[in-house]
Length: 331
Image 1 (cartoon, rainbow, N blue to C red):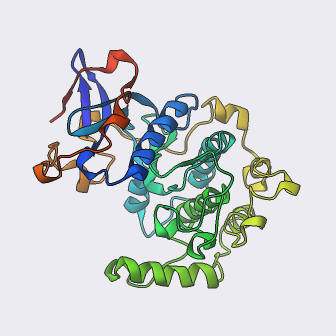
Image 2 (cartoon, helix red, strand yellow; image 1 turned 30 degrees about the vertical axis):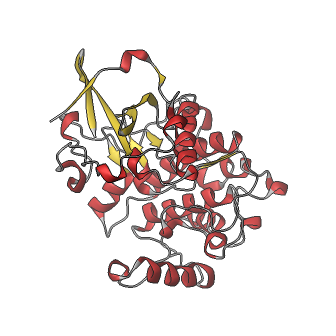
Image 3 (cartoon, rainbow, N blue to C red; image 1 turned 90 degrees about the vertical axis):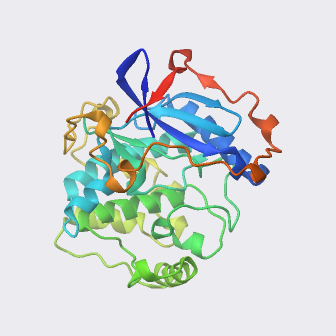
């Protein structure tokens, strides 16, 4: 949902809203608090989504975050599909996302939901990695069967019910790069739109674990090399995970990035491959109409579920800048 500052209607923000009635157990509470903690930390990095304010009401939890008027990469992927966006897009956005992931990993955070939908663009074409609701903080490895995001971006160790670590994020980055360069997912289930979630998971598991990665040779050798390195099925040999090769530092020295000035990139001084067209930020024209044509109305609360046994957990939930304490919905 979009919101505007009452004192300055030209200042637009995005608001993520969660129902307290849908908090089922202590684990749900932990994920919400973790998302808030990561959002607070993210204010220290240029390529992570920024939080302005968080607060609660009797029935809902609110995150007021920056509005990325450039849309998300999935939107641009869909616009040109089945054609690819190309290596220039893949190089630039993979590099900015790499910096974001390295920052998270430095703070012992696994993102676990990297996908095109969660790479948002600002009005200048730079990206922000968003959606920290599935992040895991402070452990060396996640246990088997723990939460994961989109199945199309899940690595073999997820499907194989093995413990996992930061390597899952690098696999997902490889999937993202493959999509941008080839215009399609690397591992696809035929007629996947018509499959149940269980059937889709079962067939994807078989494909991801057993099928050989298909990489067409019309792209550059440097692109082929880095995609194969990220999409290495053994996480111990995956790019970014091999200590003897420099760990995550090995990513920056890949030939695919040989002409990239990483310091300039960190300073947002590298020109993006595309500058989004933003005629009216309030119209959200760079996002799917599936979302933007819905009325900004909170769904009703079922009074039979209006019991919040974890209410005390959100006692100190309000956070950040007091200048952002008064909003109204945009039309």
